[in-house]
Image 1: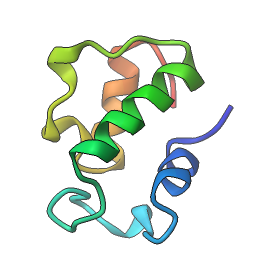
Image 2: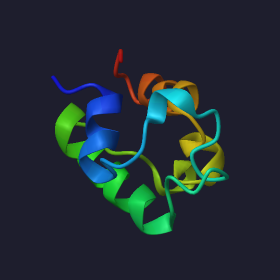
Image 3: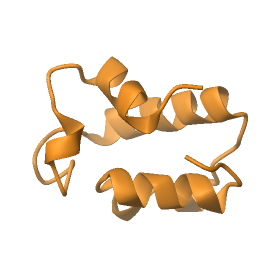
Image 4: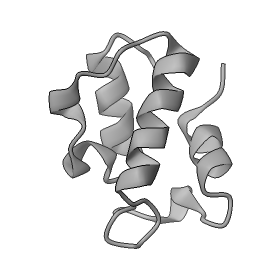
Length: 76
């Protein structure tokens, strides 16, 4: 199963997501990237992320993304 970092690198290969604490503030992810990421996470992990959870706070860094996955029953 792909890791979150691998998925992020597929969406935006030019960035080092392990070096950032705020992907959005650092310009690494925009709203389109978030939608793409949600779709990819849903397909990769067989989950359905609730629309109410698609907020910038859940896509800020690796820790918030992993928390979102855990909330949906995935152990990252």
